[in-house]
Image (cartoon, rainbow over all chains, first blue to last red; front, side):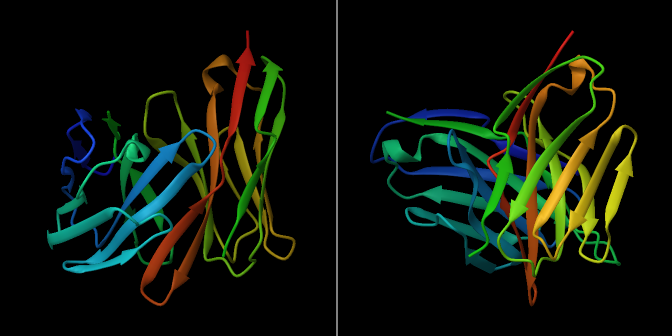
Length: 115
Length: 114
């Protein structure tokens, strides 16, 4: 599992409240990603990071922000949660050994419900 | 923008059958292609990764092929077992400078009946 943990694993919140999800890795990987998974849409990239303080937007970044102040932690924040952000959120890392075999490994997921 | 399509969306087969899952992508300038498995309520597990210079990869009963020029990949599962029941996802990797990202298909839900 490449040492990836996500917290919390489940969260129920109300519309308009801020929410922060945490992804933690123990193997010093440079690349980290946040995805959301929804029925009918599959996995969609929200934001990703290619180093400490280096982040970029993915396909569905509106309403989300991220921060990476140290290698091991990548935080996803919903500034003001909406019901459309009810989803399962996955964190991932890419292991980039020499030779280009860039395998992506996923965390266990966080199920977020916004009422 | 890269688009990844997986066909069929769902497949049900009897145990022991050999089967093929299909993945197609619109932009052939890919860096690699990865197949994942996802069990209900779980995260994704990497099965096979094919680099853009490769034609196929094998792991046990699984064989994945890649034809970049036609924008296609297949995942072949030999002698299917009930434990193979899961959703299988194809993801295309693109490397734009130092930025590496995957684009996922919506998956094929496989059910292997005993």
